[in-house]
Structures are given as structure tokens and as C-alpha cells.
Image (cartoon, rainbow, N blue to C red; front, side, top):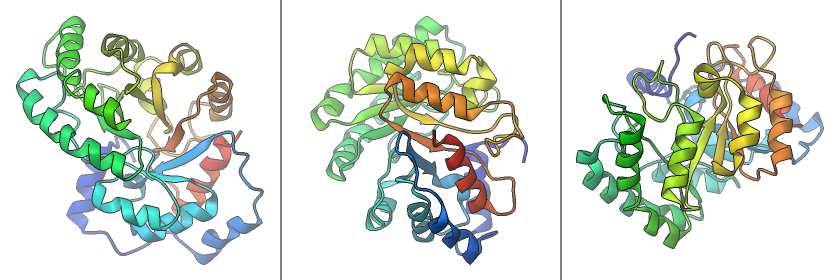
Length: 291
């Protein structure tokens, strides 16, 4: 699978209507986990549902529970009860905003974005969740400084309500190669925006896959900027597939660096399985990260 993005994957899932089958899933895969050593508990494990889109959510939650994963994420409010009923949480909620490309860098969208987040933030809090994703949107020809000013102006309209409800608005760092022209595409840019906003209720989603494409230096940047992270994503590079020996990053060292910083948030698996047995891939990658 080449050049996979969340957007293209979701479009493919919707187009195919694939909601009922569990491909590459066997009883031995589901139940073999009972013989595994328990997870160490140093990393709080989550997984992005969109990467496993053809597995029904309830079934997927049961599988995650057995593996030891605590969260299934990037879900809309109507999907949360299924997760809760399986004894899991949603480490990164979605359901507000206008998508990846239309974000806070566009002042003409601020009124619409503010209204959307004002509606969803209380819903997130009522559900007992913390993180709500947001995006910068495209650069659209502005300088870094103009981008900071645009995003700061819009976000400061909603950080007071986020503070009131103890919800953390979390802007995702994405690569601007696959997500062409995306503004928040370097850790230092996102960290400066956090500094400008000046609220504990605005932080970053540090996506290792995306930042490896844009800047590398993963462990050093984790050590330097971890205080601005409310969530972390994994993914193999190149290809966004399994985070194993087939790609260029060594995740055990990355996870140890995360633990050493004292980071207490979740680490969400956001790779798209290339192997036929998707659940075996998921469990393998969880074990790789369980340092």
C-alpha cells in the first residue's frame, strides 16, 4: 500500500460499503492472546479504527480488549458508546471541525469552526473524554508568522470553553507531502503555536510517521517538545505500514525515550496493515511498543 492517508482510506471504506466482514481474522488470532505475557503498563496503548475499517467496531473493541489495548480512537460521538460498552476509552475524539484541509489558518472559517467546537466540547466532557482533534488546515500561501497569527486568533476563541470543560484541543502534526500544503507540518511550528496560545488545554498530536517524513530526529524532538504533546501516533515509514523490521524507524528505542520523558498520554497505533492477518500485525506492533 503506497501513499496511504486517512482521507483516502476512509473514502475507500465508504465507497466499498465494507462494514460487515472481518478479513484476515481467525479464532486462533483472537484467542491466542490469552497465552501472551501481560503488557508492561509503561505505555498506554490505543489504536486508530480507520486503519482497520472493514472490521465492525464492536468486534474490533473485543479484540483490542483481549490484546490489552485500552482505547480505540478517532471516532465520532455516535460511536463512543460501543467503545465504552467494551470497557475501553476513546483517547482521541473527533466530531468537530471541517476536516484536515479546512482549519484555523483560514480566518473566514473561524465562525463556523468555533460554533462546531463549542457544540462538541461539552459532549466530549460529558462522555468523560479529554482529547479532541483539530487541524491547522492548508497553508494557502501564508508565511509561518501569518499562520501562527491566524490559528492563534481562532483558537483563542475556544480555549476558554476547553478550559471550562477540561478538554484538550489537540492539533495534529501532519506531513505536507501526502497532505499537500498542510500548515502544521513541523514540530517546532506546532510548539510555537502552543506557546502563543498559552493554555494547557491546547496541545499537539505528535505523529511519528508524519514527522519522520518532514524532519526526522524523532527521539531528540520527543525529548525537546514532549511537554506540548497530548497524544502520539505511530506508523511505519516508508509506506505507513507495520512498525516492524520492514521500515526505517526503531520503535523500541522511540518508546523508551517517550517513557523516559514522563509522558502519561496514550500512544495510538495508526499504521495500515500490509499483512493479511491484520490482527496479528496489530498485536505484534503493540508488543514492539510495549517497553
